[in-house]
Image (cartoon, rainbow, N blue to C red; front, side, top):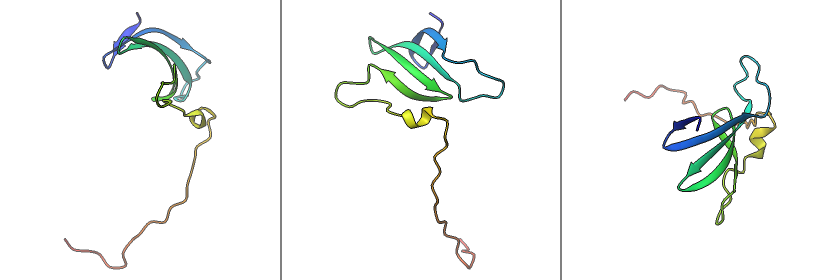
Length: 87
């Protein structure tokens, strides 16, 4: 056992790539027991991007778009009133 975090035990931690300094988005694999079942978690930064087994009724953590390293941007229009609203 490597350690405990947020109520689940981390059994092993394997880095899937060498992280350089300042590389907060490197992937790592954790094996964890959650609710009496063993899961393999792939995490990138603080996000779980894949979990194995994926889930029986609804697949969990289908976030392959987080793994490619491309930031998804979307253009939004913001509203700013012409006059200041005094509350």
